[in-house]
Length: 168
Length: 140
Image (cartoon, rainbow over all chains, first blue to last red; front, side):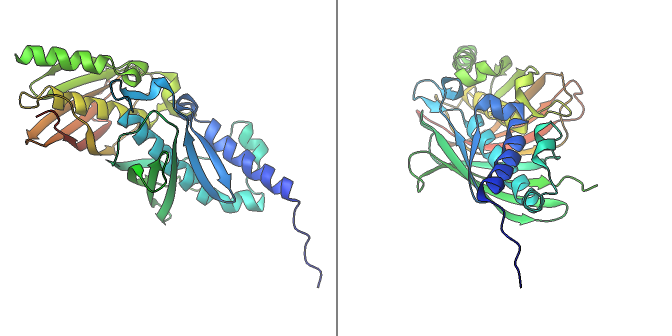
């Protein structure tokens, strides 16, 4: 029985990266903060390069708590979108070309967001990952964590609830 | 004395680089109450289709305003840091309008300050978001 030949790895990577890039670069606030995403298969890691404009306490100095919160919210929202768009990206139903042309899929809406500050954010790059704890047709619950130099010493964690975009 | 404290808190908040970046302005401060305005800015857009400000920017405003309310409380000795903050997003802020946050430090102990906050756009009857948070009390 002849199996279908798998797609060349470059084609797969290009499609995934184009979809991710369209998702992230379409939002001005993410560009403003300088947030980008690193992808390994379907796993995403958010990156926040340090910049003076992100400082919240000039005497320590430390990253603004609001920036940390925003970073976690972005990570949670993109990870959630990415996980529900993934099947469509893989099947080719979602065409990265139309995405880059500006027709973005609707993003989930934040219902509520709770952030715990565990350590002060140092003037260094920060990283974050999120896990979709539950994703239903209407609501989703997502947990996110941010760290800097040590993965085991998180600077903040958050739980967010989202209203899923309507399928039409 | 309290007026002095308010002045110090105002000065401190206004030197925060990120708050300045977002154009935050203290319009009222003192006795555990702080009001901060953040003008509409295209860089803060979260939904390019509608032009609605990203929730993250509202978080930054709520966090700053909560901290300012704590600092202005008569029983708060000096600095503060956020322990946790929960924000409920009730409706999208109307694009083009300034967002104003109003935070109250309604209880304070030697080590913890409790804060409630609300954010409004031009429609002051319907809040855009509300928040509750706990802050550290430092320098006591």
